[in-house]
Image (cartoon, rainbow, N blue to C red; front, side, top):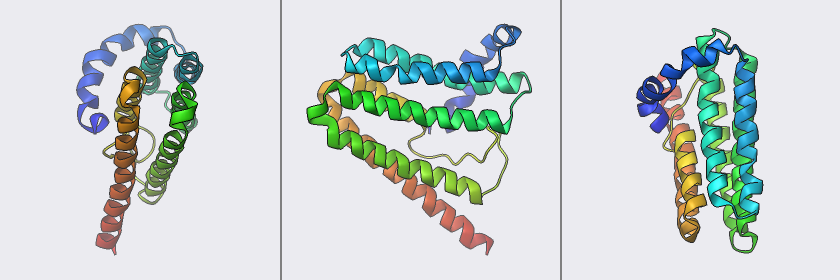
Length: 199
């Protein structure tokens, strides 16, 4: 929901003012995608080593670069389907790495919860991609964007809180799973309604 309702003002306040200087560097958007991927994956070893604040810093950098790559591509008029694929795949790798890191922080107590988080994320991503295939519409993200309760911004907020407040990890992880599954369910339900109206 944050992406859907607050992306434009955040873009205008924090990203657009930086774009003229950043685009002047003439770096490929893939560079920022790679940076988001590397910093996101680095969350896992940081958590394994019990460096929570460093892990949080890597998470924030990854999220910022993930926003930046698409913005740079559009500013340079160089957005391509290949870039969109790289971005989507990198996002899923980062999310997997973060959940792996959350598990490695305390394997004995978090194994099942982290496995369930991965499962719920897989179900939600599947609903997102399948609905996107059948609702073949264009968007500024190079593919149909189906909004939900838990999108990338919400997921990163949950991950950040799980990293910082390990004492309430169980509660946060269960809430995250429930909202992610609810997101998938609502997405499929909305698609079903849309499909019936078009018949």
